[in-house]
Every structure is written in C-alpha cells, then in structure tokens.
Length: 133
View: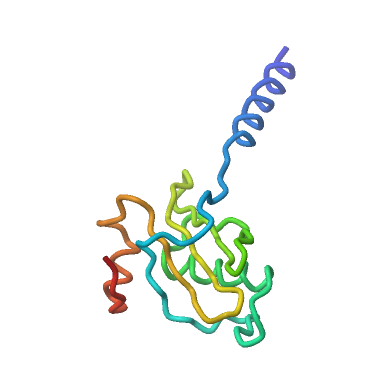
C-alpha cells in the first residue's frame, strides 16, 4: 500500500513539473532591455561567433553576476540571430529576466522581469553605471 501511495505521489509530482512551460515566450528583446558589458568568460571566443555551448557558458557566468548564486539559467534557445536564456532565481525558480546573446558575439542584453524595480539586478546595474529606463 505504501509503495502504491509513493508511486502515485511521484507520478503526480513528475506530471506537475513536466507540464510547466518554462521556455521564454518572446522572440525578440523587449524595449526594456539593457545592454550589458561583455565580460571575459572562460571557454568563450566572442570574435568567431557564439555557439550553443558558449551561450550556455555565458548564461551561467552572467547568471552569477546579475542574478546571484541561487537559482539557474535555462538552456539557451535559438531565436534567429540571438540566443535567449531564461534566468530563474531563488529556491522556487522565479522569473529573473532573460539574457539575450547575439550570435555574432557583439552584444549581450538583459531583459528584466516585470516588477523588478527593487531587485538585486537593478541594484547591480546601478552599481555598474548601466543606464536603463
């Protein structure tokens, strides 16, 4: 009986988690995007274009810098000339914005989540002198 109950709980949890669509829905950066400085990321050569593997490294690096250590970025999604990475922060995985990386390596942008006015991302941008609206 316990085994059947455990299996039923596991099945419900797995179905619940798999039914959540955590992919970014936008096909292009919003008007709220800010351009971030291009940091040196080990394993990334910006000059020869950015591959999926390099976009993952950039997403991991910028996640730690912009969002913090709690949470994680999703796998980058192909959006034509850009890679789009959804950033999930906190234990519950709340929306922490999108990271847009140009495949030619010339631009990295942060698309903040709605209601981010008091967030750690905004404080970090302020401390870096990055202008946003």
